[in-house]
Length: 259
Image 1: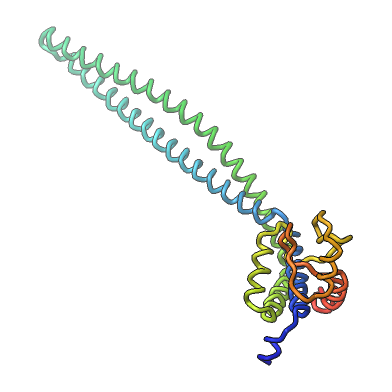
Image 2 (image 1 turned 120 degrees about the vertical axis):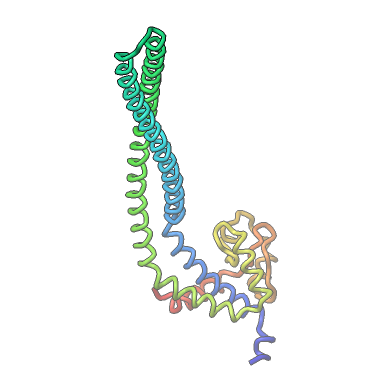
């Protein structure tokens, strides 16, 4: 068995690579059916989290200002009590000096009441403004949560529809990858990672690598068809295989990708 692995031909390597590409391309198709949904779900979750933090900040500020209103009301109640007390004392004073002194205390407490009333109105205006903003924020959060729930359901449906096939193909991808030596497999994975389409091994279409507009010279096309060495396209960096091999492996892999 070890001898067979060492003596594996270039053609067998190319076939193994292309078979793996077929499997991985199908996996890419499955994941692409989900489109931008996973990103949309994540973005919505982040946006909701940010809005909830703003909402909590508003609530804290409203509570703080409501506490200030209560403090000012207590101050007004206390001042009113003192005013009543001082007025009663005025009825029993013995001279004008005591009367004037109490009058000043009454005047001071009345000013305290006026100032507290002014502050209460200011706080209430701020509270009303923040409450309106908070209500709008909560409405927005509710709308986004509803939208998020819809998107999550949509994503879950798509995942459930394809999960069995995806798991099967992942297992097959691992199985087929074991038949390729590590250096070649590493090159394949590097090319795939650098490709927008996920293609690392491509056939020729009208003399040009699939997805490329650069037609290869006849001599290069002949070398590819001979399958004597692994040829990398100098423009796209992809591994090249001939049309006949592509057709043969596509037909063979229909029994592997049977979903």
